[in-house]
Length: 451
Ligand SMILES: [Zn+2]
Ligand SMILES: [Zn+2]
Image (cartoon, rainbow, N blue to C red):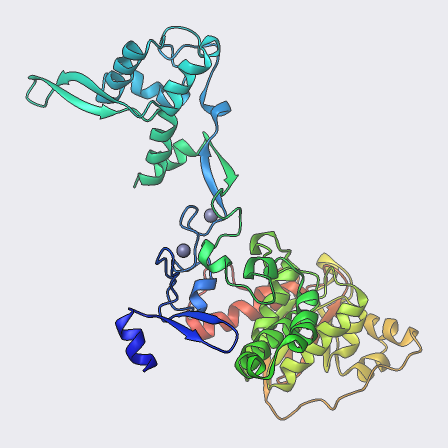
């Protein structure tokens, strides 16, 4: 009978329970205005998807508006080129310039008075229009006199229309100099449609959630939210909450707990970007991958370095190889295998000084790193046996920059630290020699200089 009622009512049904009536809609529609939502799906919560993006700003959170201060020279009249983007237009007569002249005549706006001396009414008509129709006289393509009727919406509207409609990159760049970025008045920077922002969990919408730090959210999803759910809700939400907390945990574990999820990626430092990629790699659970990292610990607090190291080891445990260029003592100590380059910077560097496990390096009399590590009386953390069963990576005859014809074998399946003084050749060896060589081997192409 419920199904029949729904069919008859086009999806609306009222259920009578003991104390009150409940109105339900099959189509997620409002009973008063019929306004309906499409079925809720993950894409709706992304401002990169047209399903979710605010229509006014296309999901950018801001819109480009004409900046009046940039288009007007108050000391010049319209006829003298006081409206800067129209300067080129003034040299030839067009339907648009004739429209402006017609409007000016009929509305008594002076085109020869400096713009700074015009009344507010006159400026408003020029810039924002009247919304009225005007008949403009001119000649058609055959040279015969003709008339067109045109609505006057003002110069600002015309320029903004042109900015959004033009197919020419040049015109857009040209107009861009007269624009400024303003907060989108529709979504107020939230980037999503009002319908999407109306969907809340525990009173918060997705925009409010993503403006909190990873650590705060992790706490919220792990504890606070779970305690609020009734058994039915827990059953429904369990899978999603697990997914969300596991991703937040990855970010937290690479020392990014302080970031909020709404942070734009272009504002992240190099170290932060490396750690985000690392977090997403841990999430994929891939094995047999070789990762090359250049000082991932840079800018981290000491306690966050511990979490980062745990994440690096986790990747190794999954069956991957990590080659890390690093100065940080904790990370060096955590390595399964170390390679030291030196002995000093520039022309005096580029030699292989020592290689081996941390205890081997500490015993090695040539190694500066070893001397440095042994100076500290604390015994290096739990020492894991070196993985020698996953094969080796051979680098031979490396001569780029200051490298002195190096050859070395790296045991795969380990956390490998590349250490040594600054300028000793670490980055040259790894990011300019090993990485391009591997890329060339795998892709067949590498366009930068290859060591
Ligand atoms: Zn409604
Ligand atoms: Zn918007």
